[in-house]
Length: 416
Image (cartoon, rainbow, N blue to C red):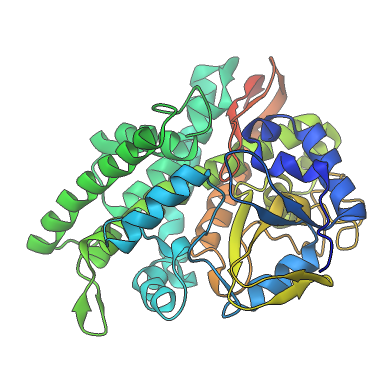
């Protein structure tokens, strides 16, 4: 029997508060990459898992999607939540988004929205995205000389983009924002609806009820938007189940804006903390493409996903038994010293940049092109207009192990 490697540093991956202190988090992850890149984690309240922190190991796992499956544990949750959601899925009533699925069902469902995120669709959408980017930079001018960049701009700009794509009425945008913050901020005392599993399920039920009504409306009166495409989609000749339809909406409406807002807010903080890179970008706007990729690498809005072994296997020579789960730390992979030169330097010209912020393989983020375009459009509008900009207080991070980033970023500035 091989002795399991257990390194206390890996416990941070199950601690939502650890993600509010980036310096300590990265110190722990650097230690793991060097000394225990595959470590067994057994902490109170969670089912044990293997923490995988090296870029190459995560890519290997993502490639082997038959061996390593999303079901039954696609992301880190406490044991009670794992049990409740598993029971719901087995009963056919649980949330089942693309991140919960494996092929062939994942492949079939992914096709439903794929055309809306292809290059042609992105080109058609770019005019609207650029217009919204200008609107929100103009709003910064109106709000100045100080504001909370996260709450005034970063959360709202991508929200308007994705919900406009879905075709939701603007009057419903605040509701979607609140539900998304409650879902992804369920471990943060400021954003959570409550501290129990029932509170989390209540948030999901609110999502389900909203989107069930939307589905009925779009099936009765189809429109030219993504919501209608989802509501009227067919897989193998059959309409989607109510749960699959609602789940599709949830992942698009929530992940489609919350991750991008984290990227924009974190990208802004990175520029503020590295003023030389901001100046470099202002002097050479042709670097915007690589700058956007560096922001996405640096911020890592999606912190982790999990996979479960369908057969006895190994990672980096460590035996992993059938049924055991691994947590893939994208935060760690994006600072892997074997992949990135000077990984703790924010470099707007970094190339190549093989970050894993969008995942890899068959589960590569469906909305990656849209996220890149939104971030690019916003900073392309903002950066040339900056005369002065600086932090006006402490940056504050969300306590979350799955999707997270800044919840406050006070800035002081003057714009053209």
